[in-house]
Image 1: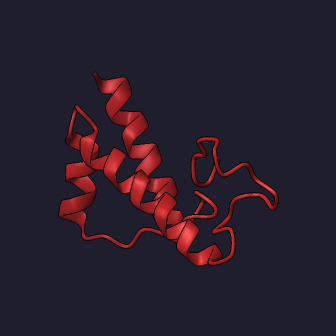
Image 2 (image 1 turned 45 degrees about the horizontal axis):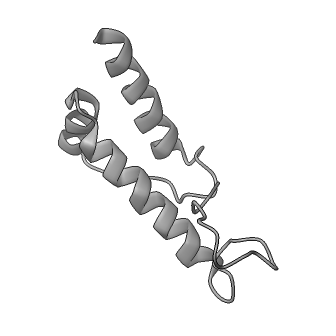
Length: 81
């Protein structure tokens, strides 16, 4: 829907502006940006958000990669949450 496309555009704009802390700012050509916004399934955007979470973990580095100290390793965690 138009409302969902507008929301995808807002998410991509926030990523480009570096407002999705702790993700690094997205640098992408206009064709990719438009494809991310236009894709109704948002699979590409979902993959990009997963990449951002992985990048944030890599930037935090060892020993916990951004997870809280003393976290339970048997529990499931979402990076960047």
